[in-house]
Image (cartoon, rainbow, N blue to C red; front, side, top):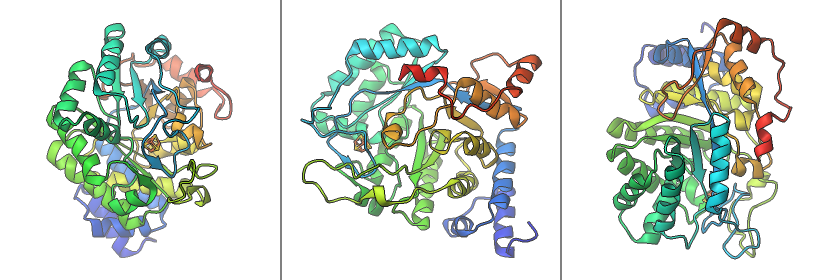
Length: 398
Ligand code: SF4
């Protein structure tokens, strides 16, 4: 760190010592350009939090139960307005078939999210969860982002707590952190319409955590937000985690611009995000490293190889992440935006092994659910070729 400015070096030393950074201290780190120093510090914090020889991944399937959405998000090429010819709602049989395929591939979870359907009643979500759990009691249903849950509360005219308790009783296992984008209302109002604002997004998590539930926290950056607003986002997450302790992990990724503005009809009132150049690996790794320094109370950080690709996704494990995230059998929202990478299970495991760690499959609570690989299995993994451009065996499920 000898070439760093003394101010930055002091901040990094403070973080290494386990002292909490303030917003004013985090900002110059995000403004700085010494990626290597930030990565080294983020990695030393990861090693302190996770001294175990393992780095993890999980196997789940992303199921988008409907693309009908009453909201408009300027980055989302996935949704369709109600009445559009392409609108779908998955039938229970299709849902169960997808889950069976996931289980057959060793998956223990589904990530189920959708648009904010203007008509489906709360009973539809309860029945869907009950159907899933009656067929697959062992599968964790990681479902419904905070904006969806906020929407369910509005549609049903029931308090959030009632909605969450009913869904928990029906089989909802944990909440994904989708729809977080940037937790600053100036940004949210610019790029989304009809979607939960910051306090509502946080409050869904708060109520869920107070019921004993766990969830993940996310951040989609690299669009209209300022660096100060990225820090504010991290700060709001840290503040809520101090209060509830319910976030298991943080995942950040760079906005993937849609090919064209996803507006239908005469709507032209948003930001044309197709014109925003996507942030690159430098910005991704730097932001994740600063997040590792700042979020001292969130235990896990997941690499986002789905948007960054294999090489950067692997490198992220040296910039604060301790987990490769999910094998992610389907990822429609990112795929519709045109940028999605596929990795096979073997590639994920090899990415971990190449860094000198032992790959382990985990569940949503970060408990290992596989056997530790043998020496010969690790040697076989390391002899594989990179397959980031190949279509893996699991892609046939799409
Ligand atoms: S991101 Fe979600 S809430 Fe926004 S338009 Fe797409 S489906 Fe709807």
